[in-house]
Picture 1 (spheres, rainbow, N blue to C red):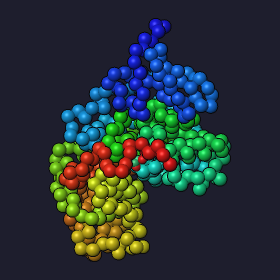
Picture 2 (cartoon, helix red, strand yellow):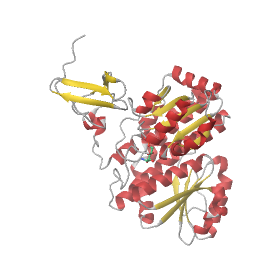
Picture 3 (cartoon, helix red, strand yellow):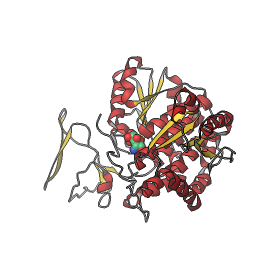
Picture 4 (cartoon, rainbow, N blue to C red):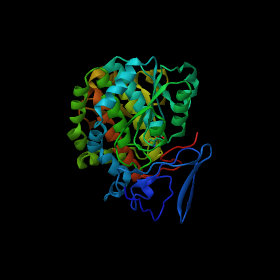
Length: 410
Ligand code: AGP
């Protein structure tokens, strides 16, 4: 095999910074240090001494890193979702079957993540319950240490992280490994710590996500959770068929007319101090994710509640004109519309995310009714709304204040 003639090296914490010059990459492990000089590079591990690490090839190309004519990466990445969801479900079926077998063998299952990845875990727990009648424990990665004493060698932990470098998630993974538990990673970055430390992993195939906000990687995670729930229920083909059927729905949800419709809503909300969001079941997880999108990119206080929780306190927050976004799905329409009525009776401004217009809506965002796949379709208008709010406020949606794309500190 011809010697790989290397004339220059790039040292970086992110492959997107040198992808223009090379797709050859050596991923360093914890405690690795590199000595690079004109004779080449040598890698030492502070525990193992001199080591050699494999040279990988990055599947992404420089073009994917560029904005492609869009003003912001956030909009570009939102509009990629009709494609990225299709790529997420292109998995090696033998790996999916191995994971399903692991789930069936497990005694205790945890879904662990942070931020949007945690919301994907929560969505996954509803899907596993609804479709596969399987109970899973959903835990914020930063809270996982409080459950460590439950871990055994029969526990199965799903660690969900697009970057694969989130310190809280890696802490949880190491705790699981200490107890002999199996770890399945759901991750977007090949060569990340999570891919190395998982027993098995599913790649999200979403391509590089440059914007600090998770948009396409969130829906890819939810698509994978949906696929696993159907596979676990013995309905893998049915699940894949439904997910493939989303292509045009998502394409339409990111259309220019939808973006204009959401810009009008953003103009009505841009000066609001608070925006509340409510949903039930799968839509509660969607409401949490939508609230995170709005708050982290527009700095408007946005807070989500389970619809049934309103009268246990949050209703006190509603006054004349308070905007409340209500996520409606066929299977719990009656109850959530009754919650919307509670808001309306206190003067709230009700924004409906729903397949049908309802009398109670002051503003309607039309989405298709997709049953178990509603979490994917209903979040997309919210991603666009959050984006429009940030742009209207003259903020940079790609780099919100105080936030990093990958939180590598505890
Ligand atoms: C989401 O928009 C945020 N960027 C943040 O909450 C993120 O989801 C969280 O930090 C987890 O990141 P990860 O998926 O890379 O682990």
